[in-house]
Image 1 (tube, rainbow, N blue to C red):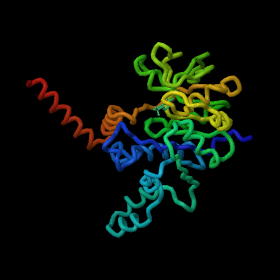
Image 2: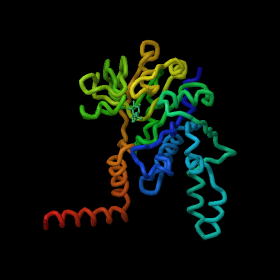
Image 3: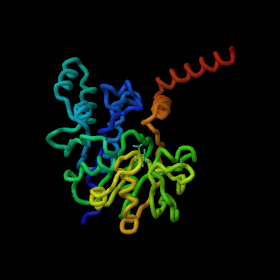
Image 4: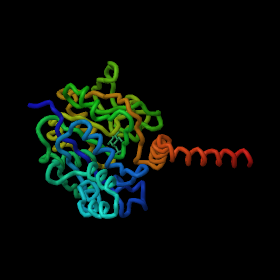
Length: 294
Ligand code: G1P
């Protein structure tokens, strides 16, 4: 059995209710941070980690995701004809070529949870451990999945971050056994616990490297929090046989499933772009001026 991580699963079937009305016609994964949709950051991270096959678990109401990720020759030709060959080249680089890239789209027809979404990918994964990337957890800086794969030593590895007590109920939370540098050994995981029941404040962020046994566990996993089949529960169910580890990643994470996280990510990237940083400074300066004048 290979230990190489060859497949990444992108669960992208969700409705994106927190961003309505923006997500009525536009999938939440295509909402941009500056000019780049969230799904593109996730794809770039998987590519940087050397993933061979990308499996998108989508929904039939979201065909725009496929349109975005696949190469659009007609659009490129049009851009070239209009004297924008560099933009055409950038689009080509970012997109998947149907002839040379290994990309699979499969559908999750009902919103039955993250665990169910991962199970939908089962027949499309290559052998060995599989990665799962949740695109609305945007991690900038050092690409997270690559460093996780490097640290992976079997079992299930999840990326983790310490969160405030009042936020634990939004996450999967680790029951910590011990800590060695960036790695936390855990004996269990709880999905969205009440603050008083949380085993720690170490939350799972949307990157996983999973032993392929996870698919067996998911097959029989009963619905949990929110009446959905939870990936957390399936990982927890076999903690004795498949050790659970947490990985403290180096990058900066933005919760782009929330408006505040989207705004922070946008401001963060704008601050790194000289032209946009000027706009930002002028805006902040004006606001401060208006405040002190008030
Ligand atoms: C999912 C997982 C949760 C994890 C979170 C990270 O929850 O179920 O365990 O902590 O992603 O963002 P969701 O945010 O989809 O409700």
